[in-house]
Length: 345
Image (cartoon, rainbow, N blue to C red):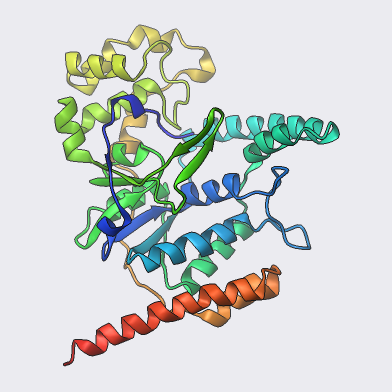
């Protein structure tokens, strides 16, 4: 789902060259779900191997990350751990949405409605343990650092992005800003076009600097967290009815402190249906002090044989295409080795 504060967030378009030589922490689940929902066959079904195993995420990992590595970006993928209990609501909602989409997809399949098959097929995405394990395996074979978070991946990525030497968090979700990441990069994809319900739109990488955003809005980090809770997060998906982004911004600027802000809407929270009621203090603490851990950012050696074994042997990817991608990686490895040698002369 993700937090929706797009209307009040200003962003700056950037070029891939702006990230050359910089290390970024990628919200792994967010990115893998992108691959699963967008990398599909003409009828909307996922890419699969001969045994019916989904491979859309593996294709996305290979091609996007090799392209980014060629641009000189250093990548750290951060995976979700145990979700907070409060996230059960959004998990239930997503499960219900998938079941409805599955019914619609089957109906469209029966009538050979390809447009609806694509539409509802994208909503059937789900990561399982085997897909996550194999994603980590392939990332490490590509020489990419993998970090396992104890809790929310976005929170861990935000924490790591505050460390010296780490430039930004990469995610499509604005939640990263609420977790306190200093710099958020969105749309870090090699594709320049994105298909929407109204047609194709241009997509370019964009950067949001947290402190610049807070200064522009005239608020602090606690007030940003309050805005998130008011409009709805993964912990309270419905938020408060009739309080949108701009109204939430006005409220936090009027009442200043979290206690006063939520005292002003206490009646509205109490009037919510029982399943939508929430404890703002509990949610606030999940953003202010999430479960994170120290992590050594270690980059494994590229393993070309492992890449072939995962993609060609296990899943039947074209050996010719995989070898052409490995050639690109070999070129990167040679350039890196040469650079290391040059330091001695």
